Image (cartoon, rainbow, N blue to C red; front, side, top):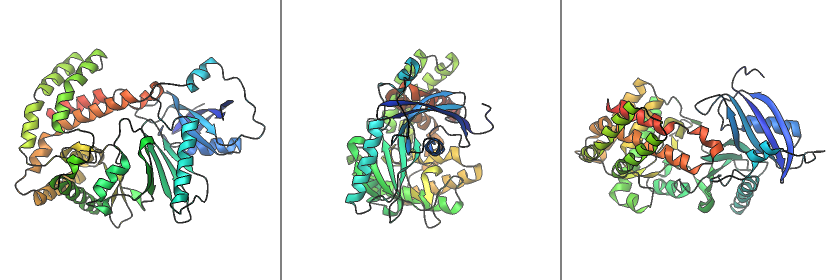
Length: 410
């Protein structure tokens, strides 16, 4: 099949342990592998029953988590009329069989359990479902479902608790000092990485306006300064990604990348030299006077949502104890130079107001290599905790971030 645009999709359909056969290939216009709304819509139309994507089982072509040909395991939530079990064959059995490090929601049973939990939790909250769940996204880091209720949309999010912050607790931490900055948590099941969130009106702030930057950046800074000042950030038990922790972990990461031959000898030599200087950089960064505090961890504009009345920050799974410059630098790769200049100015001014005598501009100048090394470690953490079939989402990302650390140092 020729791919006109977006990507092509193939499906292996199951129901209640039975293999029902392939569906597709067919085209979808959404290029992103994790975006599965169009996939479930097409398969549901062909089978006549509601379905949900269990997980990605293969990718051919494409890059950067988009395009190419994607193959999914899809579970029919009801048995299609006339559908009979059929032999899958050894290759398909291998694709659909058990695997180490599989996400809790990435099995038919785990997926049904998450949806059943959400239905019970909404009923207990007095907001029962008024229709079927709509699956929006699923990949190795999270699954997202839109749930209709009589009083508005609710979002079910599932994440892997083995390598992510407890999202409801991170939201509560920030919300205690900045309630307008965070979404409303309706229910949570931390042991299984589940959370129900009330709808945040508006749109994600890709291409943020000057007004959105001027609202959300100082809002985050105010929350972080407050959490640092009263000790709650340190006491919260967030994952430790402070500058000292990052600097200590980088040599081990470089050893792993060297063993896998993911960096050239020249890159590796330069990266080891840069890593050797990280303790001194950590001291310079500390001298800038900004406190270690609770960090969002992925503070790019796609995680700001606004309807024009004030942005709300979403997706707290990467939250950690760290240096606030991690969040200060995060928007840089997502905005143009004009908007980045505004972000840097607004962020710096907000910190100077909260911590007189600090030097946030110097922190932004210094921290690039350390922040990219931190992102490399985070990507390696993803790879260490996801099953093999989903490694294409992050393969090569740690090495790429090391190269970006070298570029930032240069």
